[in-house]
Length: 352
Image (cartoon, rainbow, N blue to C red; front, side):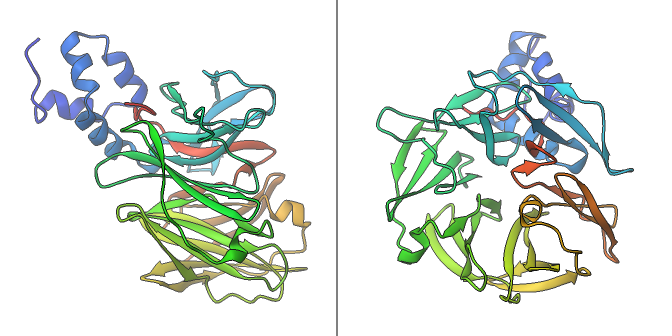
């Protein structure tokens, strides 16, 4: 078959195929295989795949891993399909740290190794090295997955070790780690502060840094992925007379935060970031008292004008919103008794 220019009708059709169909199409002929493997094709296909209808929920328990489509009409899941891990693991061993454009950054609890994994194509890449890069310690480290202006997928790894902070960037393009400077307040290095996973939005990775007691300090650390500069911005102005939790969400490339506060009654406000300042979008009624262990597992689900606030044991309540639907689904790490994530099915590779 003749060479296919990138602007032919065939190219346009192929970039709109589901990810698994692209994989099957590679076997049609050598020309198609070469075309579908180019970075230009992958980039355009990914941009057309990142839509709410292409979202999938990946759930992990001790023995199995399954993927389910989201049915937004009735806020439920479609039939599940089993996914086999392509790497060696033990029971209850795989934890998901971050996800972007179909790639998941995961770590193995028994070896502490970091991996990039595309559950749609099953391709994966180990990020650990003999010189101790790419090893993650839960509750001390923080991870952010992002793509820079040169379309290089990268992992930011923030390490806290005995009061010493190390910040490292892994590049998919050059397949190596390097250290970058980051000077921050010494108290943020303490284990009393909890760092969230990074949320990538508008060329910046955002981390919440929250002190683990009532009335503690809460800030947001921002990392510009192109200049590789850090800065600190304030938390939304929420009451500090109870537990405070901030969950960051990228909604159509605008950063939002579900900020929850309280002790015996919890309230949730939705904020959006404009510049370096937070603007309140809406508030919800107080949530009846629930145990702290459940509260830490809350998942926020917004679709079709309804806002669902759930724990891993089930839905708490529904709020009808007088605003356009976000078509956004954001889970925390532990989800309904499983470990999981929401991702889009793409052909983005964890390695070049």
